[in-house]
Image 1 (cartoon, one colour):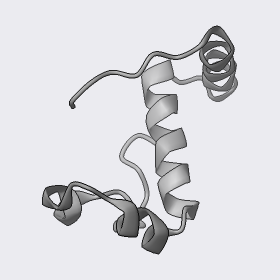
Image 2 (cartoon, rainbow, N blue to C red; image 1 turned 90 degrees about the vertical axis):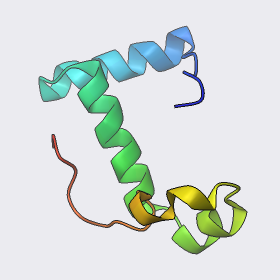
Image 3 (cartoon, helix red, strand yellow; image 1 turned 30 degrees about the vertical axis):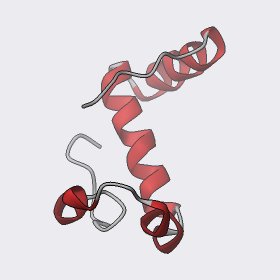
Length: 70
């Protein structure tokens, strides 16, 4: 990964509360949230704006299966 994005206090608090609700660690919960975003996002729009074609073979916007730790 190129960098780790910082979460605001509000974003971190929301993530923590979602994690508590599902009884999962925040890292697993964040991965699931990203999976959901990829599942429901317009993949044509995302892929059309993509600047890293080396990732296509394992891009979450191309894979519509279930996440590993759901």
